[in-house]
Length: 427
Image (cartoon, rainbow, N blue to C red; front, side, top):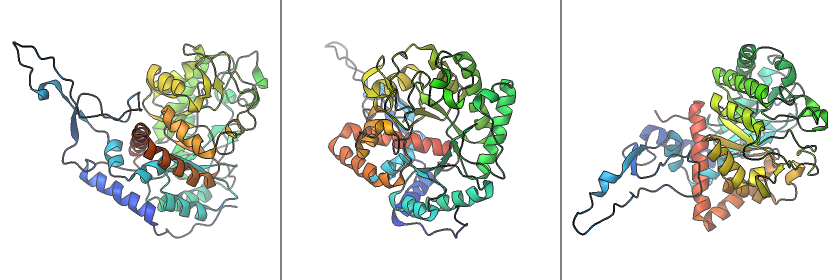
C-alpha cells in the first residue's frame, strides 16, 4: 500500500548538514578555495580511469644539467578545472561522501516515512522502487516528493523500467511497456521516441534514473535457458550484439532526451550464464567473455550514446578475472570498463542486498570491495543494510588512504551525475 502524501518533513541533522554543505559549495563554486582551478600535472577530475590514488598538485620535475638551470616549476604545470562534483564533494564530511554512494530499496509494502527518516539520518544518496508498484504515477510521485524532501531535493530516485516483465512502475500514468524483443520490432528512431515518452512518465513521477537498457546478448543456442535475460525476453535481439547495440543506444538517447539518466546493464554481460544471480550462485560463471568479446558492443554503443550509469553484474568472468565476481573486480571495473572502454561516468552494482550470488560475502565487504574495484553506487534492496555498509566504509577509509581517495572520487562522480540531472548546482 502506498502511503498518503504527507507534509514536507523537517530535515534531520545529517541531511541538513549535507544540504548546507552542498549549498555552500554551490554558492562558493570552489569547494572552499577562492578559484575554480587547480595547478596540477595530472587531471584532478573524478573521471580518471584509475581511482586508487589521489591527484596531487605536484608538477613533473625537469632534469637539471650542470650548464643549464632547470626552468621554473610553473612552466611545467597545467591548469585543470575541477568538476562541479569534485567541488561539491570537497565540502562534505567523509561520512556524507560515503552516504552518497548508497542507493537503497523501497517496496510498495514498505514505509516511505521510515525510509525518509533513514535518508535524513544517514545522508543517503539514492533510493530505488522495487517490488512492483501498481498504484499509478500520482501515488509514486507523492512518495518521491516525500523522499526528496528528506534529502533537500538532492536524491537519486531510480526504478527498473525496461518493459515486459521488468517494469516496476505501473498503473494510471504509466504506459505498459513491451519487452525489449518487441521494442526491437520497431525502427531505432521509433524506439528512441517511445523511450522518451516512457521516460517523461518517470520524470513526472519523480523518478530521475532508469535502470535500463539491458545491453546483454544471449546466444541463440542458449535462448530461454539463460535465466536472467533470455527467459524474460529482456535482450533486444538474441545472438546479435550489433542489433542489441543499435537498440540499447536508441534507448539511451531516448532517456536522455527526457532528462532521465539511463543505465546500461549488466556489464560485461549476463547473456552466457544459466543461473539468475538474484536467486542462485550456481550457473553464474561465464567461461567465454573476455576483454575483446564482440558481446561488449552494446555496452560500447550505450556509452557512446551517453549512458550516465553502467551497472556491473555479480557473475564471474574467469577469462577477465579468475578470482572475483565482476562487481568486486578491479580488472573488470577499472581495467576493462573505465580503462579499455573509456567510461568515466557512474558505475553501480546490481543488487547486493538480497541477491544470492553475493550472499556468502559479509554485508560491509559488499560495499567496500566494490568501491575498491573502482565502483561508485552500491545498490541494496535491503535498506537496513545501509548502516553496516557505512560503518565498513568508514573503517576501511580510516585504515587506507588509497581507499579514502577512491571514496572521494566516487562521491564526486555521483555528484557530477546529480549536477547533470539538475539536482545540485555549482552555478
